[in-house]
Length: 254
Length: 254
DNA sequence: ACAAAAGTGTTCCTAGTACACCCATGG
DNA sequence: CCATGGGTGTACTAGGAACACTTTTGT
Image (cartoon, rainbow over all chains, first blue to last red; front, side, top):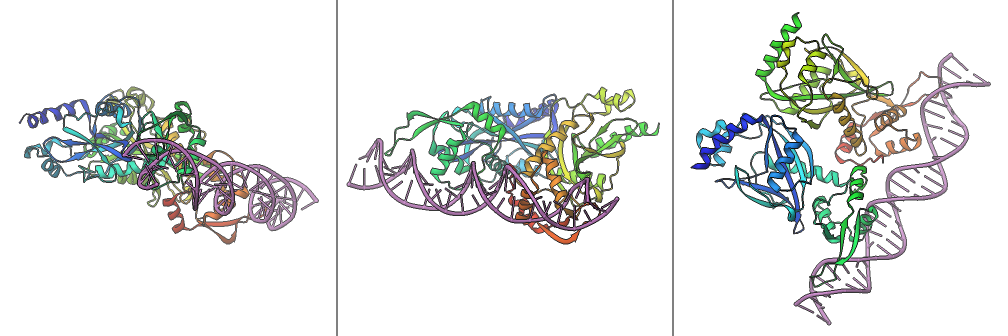
């Protein structure tokens, strides 16, 4: 099979051009259908899913590598991207088991390094602006609800958990949403986003009051039509004020 | 010179036993003289100072390696130790410059890898319980005031800055102090610690009120004698409640 | 007319902040 | 007796939390 022959070449190439034993895993969050989603990739010729990831070129900074990987996977450049933890357990995967799960040839086990330390980044993206692309090792992508994930490859379930926890903490003192929502959105949509991340419901009056008091969004004259109910107003983030709030902090959903 | 000959052996040994291109740097904070201090090591036969650090054995988890390094340097086991960031710029040091600064032989340049990614951990320790020990590469240690650091080796000034920033954020929603102060301490001492970390002064009435309201310290009957002034009461952390507060969060010095 | 979701204001209470004087001790 | 730092209470204010009804729209 072509793919399986290419695997050896692929890893040989990685070994030559990249830092050994160190990788990057990206937890790419998106939001739609009132659900927080994660971008996952299905590995070729298998039913196994995992996070987008990659390796660091020998002369490339880790942050740049993460950006590159993200751009390769999503096609967008300007995004919220943040390192959140480095995963360094001595046993993060079992080479034999992984090769079996991926239906790789028996002799492929040696392609995996003994162990890999992985630097975790998380990104917040607007799903509608993203055109996900699988990589050499994978051939299908999917946005999966963060609350209903199947068992993933490696320790990726754990990595997503830590990313989510970081996001929750972050939300309590920084605004979130600029990168997750389309340019124009309604207050209920924003509230749904916060509720999803915080995993609890919020009072719509208090939420609206607080958000508008922060001064980082502006209400437009437009309204969204379409449902058998009152048309909601559209809002837009004020990019400058949003950025300022990002730096300064202070929200506190306690 | 013995040391310089041993260097080659030392690095050969490291190369064999440890992961290549990946290291750990530890920012060990202590508190005395009303100042926040960092433990620094002077490299042998040079006047250059740097953070304690080390490498990760091939079959060792990164967290365990950090603990090991810290224990080797400070002699204590039970301490607050937390990964805070991974430093992965493509150029974190110049091999030639470092070799020159350390007065290493010219041919020693090749001992350094092209680049190293370093995982940063910070620790909070009670200076009085610590017996710092230099390592093979260094021969003197010193606690230096975090506000008055000389230029350090590599990007260690930057690493300390990031650690300090993390500590400040942490302080705003978690208690700090259990690991930095001796078992018994006075309220003004605790206040001084907070003031030092936050880098601003706090009102003693409000501080005392808030700290005692948190329920994580208990006042002892003892008082500390010694100055030409009213004897301050001694306090002690309630370990269980402290741990609980650590997990749950909520302080907010805004 | 009805179902579905949007929009909005007031009261209460907690917690942060500002602020100043007296007290104990050692020299 | 004086210099030094320790200890303490109150009043104000801002912001979070709880809470319910009316409006708009499509079917």
